[in-house]
Image (cartoon, rainbow, N blue to C red):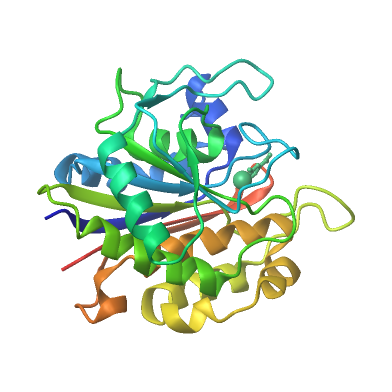
Length: 284
Ligand code: DHB
Ligand code: FE
């Protein structure tokens, strides 16, 4: 059977992708950001998954205001890096895993979550920047990726509780797949940031670090925090953090297994207009 081996959490700031693509990683501003991922890149090599289930949000790139799925699972054979206005990022095409995607869709929908099936889409910085941070600049990404898009852009957004429960359903789905695959689940976005309006530039280090503490030690408790608390405390785009609860809900301890091992934790301000957070949890 397939297994969820670990969860990875990271911000997906687009300027980080640009810094990488334009060869600026050694500049004084960016050095401390990328240094936080040195451990992670080696960890990825040492803990090579067969598939990455990558939870992210589309930023009005693949989905416009014409149609807004709350949860959408990619079932395609491949996904191209999206053109977000400056041409597509010079990164590899993302290979999918249609068989595992179809299995997860079947299982999760039968567990009463409504998923939109996406057979064709391009993927924006929400998905490609985390891959770049953890994998560097390879000629091909190290394994197939299943994109899982969550609406945190247009209200109403799903609650942290619903995201956490969805993570449990994804865990069950993955572990009922009849192939011995090692699957990592990634939650991306955050941490505190607000990109527009009078509060633009908002950063809340206290909130962010409390979120990291609680995500590790008391995810059930964190799941009960209402969406408005994220928006008030962590800014309008801080709501992206509910996606981390999907990945956390898929870890073994949530359904009676052992507590995960904290392999890596990193926090840095600023990265562009945002606070950057990163965590790696391993299932024991
Ligand atoms: C920015 C955009 C994002 O989607 C994000 O998560 C963080 C920062 C930005 O445009 O700076
Ligand atoms: Fe974002």
